[in-house]
Image 1 (cartoon, rainbow, N blue to C red):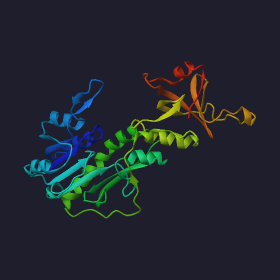
Image 2: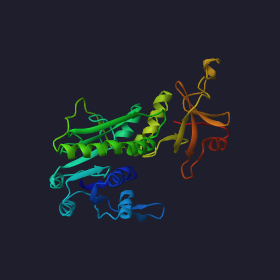
Image 3: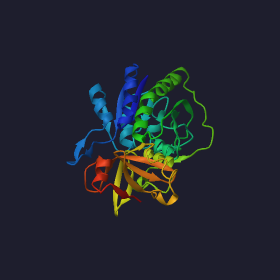
Image 4: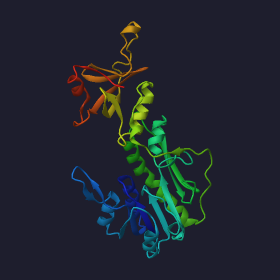
Length: 314
């Protein structure tokens, strides 16, 4: 099938590659404009732009899918539009340009977690079974008919970055099946069923961890905001970035064989067995890697040793 593809980040790369490898004619790629990256703010093409260049696919770089994008796409003669994590909405007249419309690989089991941050919000809510859905684009947000879907279980503490990378890979199967379904029956698809929920875009403040919560909720929150916008707690009035938290049995039984007064307070970090252990309401987690304000990331135990072997986070 002749396809126009829209996508930007690394999570969209497996979809573009799979369409090409499956023999589809990807006539053009739309991706966001080069962005300044790194300390020197060097203008850098998106991961999708780089792959399109390697594959020799004509590419339009645009930060919105407006009239210019529609005019460019109209010349391609595409039968189907495919969008994966482009970073913007497909509106008319572009929405109606391909003969079979547009389909989207979305990283949730729709209608749950419609919106910008489905994996992140699902993990923050404590969900461990995550899915993908390929659906037809309509003007309403993530509300079109479903073509294919898939799901799998993730272990506790799997970060949003790790989960997205895995979903992006195994979701290509659902995407290719959806394209095949449209080729066989252009009217294929079923209405979404169930209660919708929304995954609003994350802000920096979403990264602040509530250390009064139980350990499993703290770990889930950390997972959902890692690597972006990044998890943090406060230490001595400054943010301490929590790059890596781990499940641990060290410190989990604190207070079982001790009087209650001997139990570490919530948010206390102690050095135990060579690890930095964060004590919480019903257990503990290991601070494996942290980053103090104005300093590079470092091993959590090394940071704690520099604090005399104990610290209190809030």
